[in-house]
Image 1 (tube, one colour):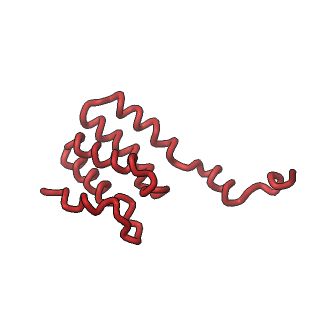
Image 2 (cartoon, rainbow, N blue to C red):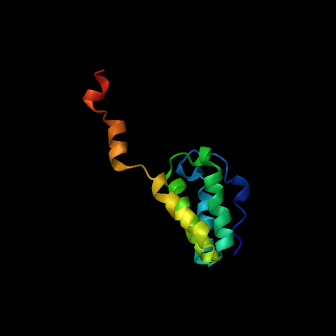
Length: 110
């Protein structure tokens, strides 16, 4: 199966949620399912390398988890552990997210 035809267009802006390097994410998932950790890691690294395109879309955070899976599949446990440790750091803490939307009244009284 050839998964590369969309590669020239993956950094483009489709004007919808799909422009967040979605083709690279789908290819990475497919490579994981095909047990090709090296190719999967390459695809997920694209999401990590282009944070300006991914912005805060969920695939950006999940790329840390998925690249960890790809490294584990390759047998590179050190890189896998590092990627797994980065994953929770990339998720917004629910309390911090709530505070940023609803600041405490005391915080503005200084």
